[in-house]
Structures are given as structure tokens and as C-alpha cells.
Image (cartoon, helix red, strand yellow):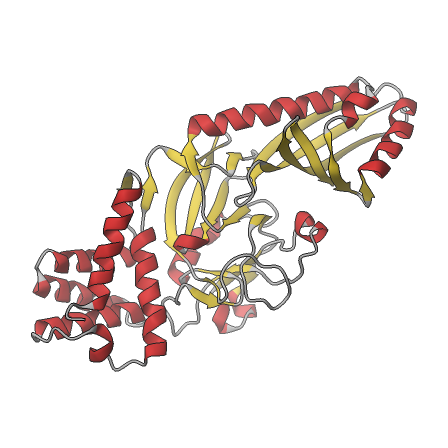
Length: 390
């Protein structure tokens, strides 16, 4: 090759990104500073680009990717049109992950469909002040705030994921899971090994749906970087989602254990707000008909909302039907109401939605108020429940 591999790669990726959709650039630092320097180089301002990268390195001296770009720009400044690999003192094994990182950063840095949201964020509960959505194909984490149940993007960040990519199935496969999760706790950095950074947030993998499907493993976290590193290559964790320490500390105050949802998809599907609202109305209507049939003690109408593949509370659909046909007619004066309803679609499975709510139940014999979760799937006969638990 007679051109600088790194900068040629940048140009090719930027052209591909521009062709896919109408995008708008949201800058972040210091990632945006590095990418800006590369764009300045492409415009023929080599000396300015060098100054920009050198200033960046003075602020972030452990940014390995910036060192790599600096070396390439120095080679160009010396009039040596050598390939990136030939001019570098790093081994090929070290270069390839960094080339992957720069490609992912350039593809994902703030390029977002305008006037669109992830299809998975259908409705946030009142308690979910923020939500996290991760696009593994772009090595990107998106942070949203809750505006009356609707998500509004605050910022996006580069992340590293499992060494073997997405679709975690078993313990030790070094893959990142796909699905709808929530943060379970906050682990302070002083109680963790240095490799996890200043704070870590475990998520509830395997969740109830994962366990039904036989998935195993544990220890999937949102966490940071070792103190010696600014960032890591895109495929570099044991399955966790890893941010730079700077970015992690920026989002940490907005994450609430037990509440903040974390949606992880191989590729996020961005749609218009109208599409999300239509889906929301469909599911809320089905949920209300499920509730009313129970309150009216119409057992067969109630059971019609459950799919043949249903599993829940240790029962399949046949066991569930037998149980409800005994319990509902003998309860007397049933009243069911729901509050704090949340709707989050599975990022990788079409028409599969996690529905969460507070269920208030009262009958002549019993009353309760519990948090409940259901998975609803859209079938030929409409939306049906495939899993239920409390």
C-alpha cells in the first residue's frame, strides 16, 4: 500500500456511514478531538493535525490510539508514504486491534439517525430516570433520559465488549449477552481489582428469560479500564461492556441499581417516535384487556392472553390453565389494577417485549401489591404472554 492505512480506512468508513442514513454528529472529547485531527489531515492540513494530536496526548498520555495516529502523521510529515504497519514499531498483533478500534470509533462517534429512537425503548417507567442501550456492532453505548416515558438521547460513548463478540450462551464463552437487563448494584472501585476501573455496575444476566432458555454464566458488568489504559480495543473484555474511566464516571451518577435498564443488541433498530407510539398502544391495549378479563373473573378470556409456549412459576401452559381454572372462579370479587407500567422490547428478537408493572390485586379472600414482569410476543392472533414472574 502507498497510502496511510489508518487514514485511508477512516475515509472509507466515513463515506459508508454517510450513505446509510441521514446523520447528525454529536461531538465527544477526547475521542472527537482525535477524529477531528484526522479530518483536518484529510483536508490537507498536516501540521495542524499534528499539533492537535500532540495537544491531545499531553492531556491523555495513555491514549494508545492517539499515539498510533501521531506516529502515522509523523511518517507523512517526513515524506515517507510508507504503510502504517511498516512504519510502526508495534507488532502486527498489537496493530490489528487498534485499527479495529479506530474504525469503530469513526463509524459510531455520534452519528445518529435524526428524529429517531431505538425501537426497544417503548416506554420507560416513572422510576427509570435514565436508560442505557448498547449497539455491539458499533461498539457504542447510548445514554437516555426519561421525558414522560419517552427516551431522549443525552450522549453516546465508545465501549469494548467480549473478546468473542455477542450472543453469550454459556459460562466462560467470553461473549456479551443480548437482551433486556437492569443494573443490580454499584461496586466502588476501591473494593475491586484495578482492571475494572473506578466503579462497576453488574447487570442481571442471566435474566429470567435467559434461564428458561438454558443460558449460563455470570459477572456481566458495566465497568471501566485499568488505570494504565485510556481505552481498550473493541473486542477485549470477558463479556462485559467496558467504558473509559472518564466516560464511566460521567454516567455513573445517573445509574440507579435495581432500576436502570440496560438494553444490549447486536444492532439497534432506530425508528420514528410514531412507530414506537403505535407499538406502545397495541401492547397497552392487550395488557388492559388481560387485566379486565381477570377483574371480571372471565377465566377463558383471561387465559386467551397466554401463548401455547408459555412458561412461568414452574408451569407450562397446561399447568397454568389448570391452576387458573381452579383459582379464579373461587376467588370472589376480584379487582386488579396496574401502575408504573414499563415496556422494553428485546433488541434482537422482533415482537418480543418485556412488560413490567406494579400489580394491585384484591379479592374476597386475598390482597397483594407486587412487582410483576411478563414477556409478550406478537403472534398471528395478536400479543400473547410467553413468560410471567414476580
